Length: 46
Image (cartoon, rainbow, N blue to C red; front, side, top):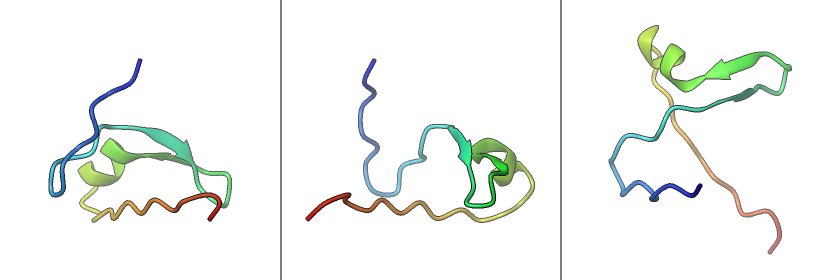
């Protein structure tokens, strides 16, 4: 069920999650509404 990792500059696959305020966030919906989205990934444990 793994997907290939996008290259730098390539579009990210659509996803949904909850915000820190417990509100739904759907990437495709945010992009449709004209918002810019920046995805950052942090390593869990160093």
